[in-house]
Amino acid sequence: MRCTTTSIAAGFAIALIGSTALAQQQINLTVAAGQPTRAMKPLAMVSDFFIPEVNKRMKAAGLDSKYKINWKEAYAGSLLKPTFVLKGVQDGIADIGFEPTIFHPDKLPLEQISFMTPFATSDVVLIGKTIDKMHAMFPEYRAQYDKFGVVRLAGSSYDSYELFSTFPVQKFADVKGKKIATAGAALQWIRGTGATPVSSNMTQYYNNAKTGVIDGFIIFPSAIPGMKYPEAAPHVTKVGFGAQYAAALIVNKGVYAKLPLELQRILREAGEAWTAAADKVQFAAGNDGYASVAKFSGGKTFDLPRGEQVLWASAMPNIGKEWADRADKEGLPGTKVLAAYMEELRKAGAKPVRDWDKK
Image (cartoon, rainbow, N blue to C red):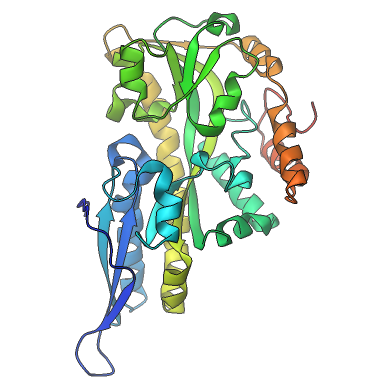
C-alpha cells in the first residue's frame, strides 16, 4: 500500500473506461506528507487505515463497480516538505495532505488552541473529541481552511509532549540556562522558564542533541521507536505538557467539489473513523514509547511532581489569554473558543494544572 513517489500528480482526473453508461470511473488521488510514516502513528495510519477504509466503504456501498480510486502515496517529503503541505494541496501538487497544523499558527490560528493551553490533559482521545466540538461550534474553524482552498476531512492528536534532555531534570529549576528545542507553537511553553527556546523540528532533534547544539527538546514519546531519541537525549522527563491536536487531513477544495457526493461522504466518514482509530493508537503508543526508554543505554525516566508542574505553568505568561486576545483582534472568536475549550475539558473530567481561561 505504501509506495513512495516523487512524481508530481497531474492533478485530479476522472476518466471513463469504455463507452457504456455503466463504465467504471477512474479517479486519481495523490496523498502526500512531509514526514516519514515511521515517525508518527497517525501518518502511518493514513496509509494503513484511511485509504483501505475508503476502499472498504466504497465496496460496502456498492460503489466499487462505479468508481475506482487509484491512490498514489508520497511521504517523507518526497513530494511536499513538512511546512509546504498546506500550500501544496492548495496548489494541487497533491490532492490530499497530512497537514501538521502546528507549523501554521499564522494561517490556522484557531487550530493552535491545545498548544496555547498546555498542562491540560494527557488524554489524546479527549483532545481530539474536544477539537471536533470546537469545529462544530464555531464556523470560523472551517473558514480558516476555505481561505486556502482546502477542506479539512479530519484531525489527529498526539500523546502528551514531554522533555527529552542530555541532562537530568527532576525539578522545574533544572532547565534554567539550557537550550531547549521544539517546534511551532510549543516554543511558547519555554517562556518564563529561564531556558533558551530553539526553533527546530523532529527530524533535527537527534543530531542537534547528539552534537551539543541543544541540551534538550520537547516531543511526544510515541516517536521513540522510529526516531531513537533516547540515544541522543537519554533523560526523558514526563513534564505533562499534555496531548496536543497537531495535524489535519486535508483535501484540495476543487478536487473535493468534483467528486460525486457519495464519494465526498465516504471520504468524510473514513476521515472520522481514522481520527477515532488513530487517537486511540496514539494514546497507547505514547505510553509504550515512554516505557521503552529504559531499553536504551543510559535511558532514564522521571515523572515531574504536580507541584513542579504548577511552578512551570505558573512561571509562564498566560499564553492562552494572549492567544485569545490576538485572535479577537483579528476578528476571530478567540476568547469564546478558549472558554468553550477549557470548559469542555473540565466537564469531561480533565484537571488542568492551570486554568488558562481564568488566570
